Image (cartoon, rainbow, N blue to C red; front, top):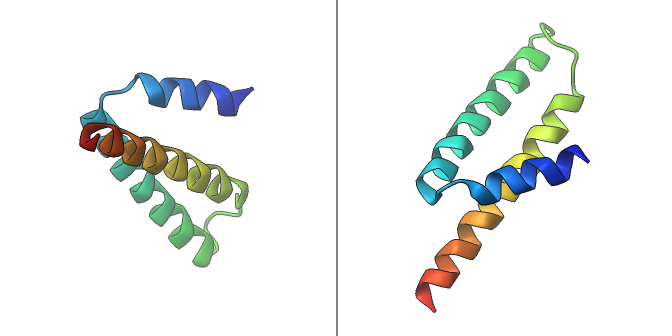
Length: 70
């Protein structure tokens, strides 16, 4: 259920906001990976969720770019 809600939320965002959200999620993913590597955080499940969200946003951005080209 959560995945569908995220995707619906991402669909409603403007392309500029998608890029901002993408940067924010990538930064958060980087920080979590560093925390896991330095053993400050053991929540590895968050990495999987962030990667999926990043992939969804990149897919939406690419779809919008292709629609603009057509």
